[in-house]
Length: 318
Image 1 (cartoon, helix red, strand yellow):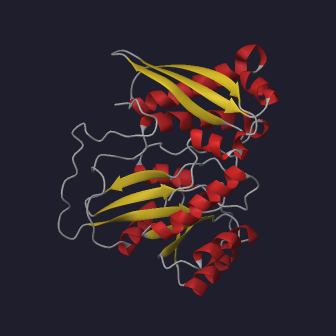
Image 2 (cartoon, rainbow, N blue to C red):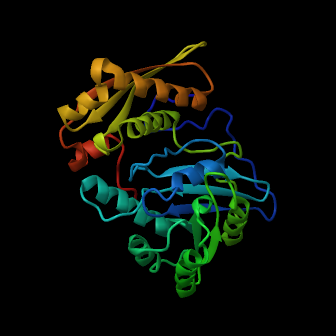
């Protein structure tokens, strides 16, 4: 079911929330970390479905996404945040502010680092933020599948952090799933008894329109890389549902004419490639045939404008 409102999600279609059994646990887990340590890949792997975009370009996660994992013992609601870095513009400030809010508003913080590299200066900004919170912290060393033979020095650099703050440390690979069962169990142990917050069969609280826009943006980031980095916002203008096909009309907003030219490409080749790849992903999301039409529009300096940020759905959360 695709909602007609870009900002609302209708739970009314028989999505009732049952009462949790005795001894059931639940809670919200904030996934925090530097850009590109694998936070979105981790959440997708834990939830078992692609709901957060992944890309080699930094800062690909913009809005806080809730991924929901329901097991017989617990319901874990994962809040995926933007990779934390020192902001360079208005959008960056909003993203980091939202990540800071997430730290204090969740039940457990999962601090994800790149476990294939030693702890470095890039993690210290986040460590400083986390040192001020009373929320339980689990340090997750991701990308252990990329490690070379010299693992003791890598582990030692993170063990020193854990020792200082008494955080629990676990190693895993979000890519191949190694160690995720132990990670999941460690998180559950940090949670208190609680209800079902969402229907057990739901994997995200985001409307399908939002995820469609994210899937389009992911293909732009993958196909254009550094040429059109974060000067891109997507709006889903119209969704038409028919028994045999779903028609999606979307606009890609950029800041400069030169970026528009890159996105369209020679003879429209780039826009066609983006549309084709995004359509395949959207078809997986809705489990049906999709027609996707993309438009490109120039919105000068939209990332510096609070009004434009708000129009495109990027707001500081209360």
